[in-house]
Image 1 (cartoon, rainbow, N blue to C red):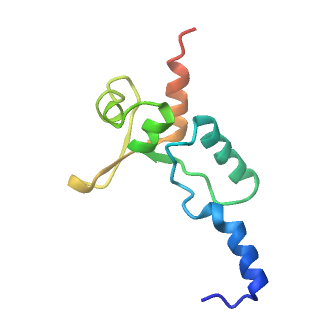
Image 2 (image 1 turned 120 degrees about the vertical axis):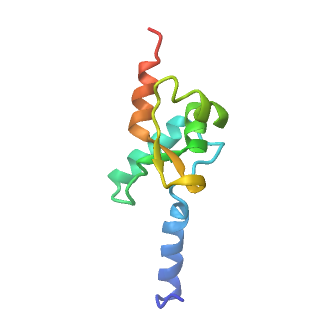
Length: 108
């Protein structure tokens, strides 16, 4: 599978172990951790940070429910992007749009 010597393949595996699923957000991660991860990947020359989050990731990012994201967020001005058509369509939210919207909700 890999033609690299064993010590090189171990080194590569340890370097890439944190990049296995770069677009997944764990429920235990906080908003600041998520934002810090995005910044560190671009500075280090790693993979490009995700520009879009799905409804579940957006809900975790905002500490809201997925139902709220689908039902209430569009009414409150948080617009989504629709990728696909029909039953397979996916709603995605641009990270920069979510950040801008959240700043606009500040009370003072």
